[in-house]
Length: 317
Image (spheres, helix red, strand yellow):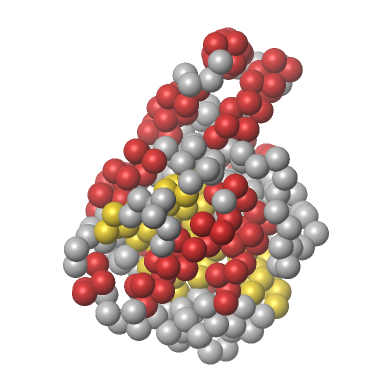
């Protein structure tokens, strides 16, 4: 692991978890498929055939797709990666049925995929909103979950907004003023607001000007802005949707498996906040990806892949 990483782990971490994470799911094969869930069909794709425990990849949003996670495909040298598009976006069936837009429904979609693939043992990966989904899934269905990777985590809306306010204060005065003024008016489509938002995202979202290309890429399929707006809101730093009062911070204490909390040096999920989340988890580990914003797998892909592989392989040993 690079000396530039900051790693926190409890002293008994490796000695306590000496069990093998060899895959117990020999029927997994590379390819694509669909699983029936309430409200439609959910698309999934399996990449890699390594003999370690499969890693179930939960993308951000809500309303996003797994497209951005293909950059982590090198992890498939060790273990199968299972990508899927949450119902409503990407290659899954689209919908605007708000009765399906609950945390419980998102969890049951994941469960349907786990059952469909007969996954007796699995590791979980989540990015952004996907970290909340990974935690929610674990809290309901802990059996068989061997480890969790929380990449750029979101567990608490109030905390997220407070961090965003701190990050905005580091931007130029004119950017701060535009964000404050048009947010107060709720005029999120104003050109000046959108320009200021782009500056925010260039600093703390994806800092790289271009997305890296990988051998695992597929033609892009859009997510759902309807779901994002309904669940979260109009912008990354203003929550007005169903998740406005979301808070699972206390539940981090209930994680009884090794959990890696990793974030970018300039991430919207601020390192100081993520460190405290890692400390709260009984078997938590913490790492910072240098020179990266929220899109760690784009801004510094090699480090992101290395950190995740090292963590999961160390747990296996």
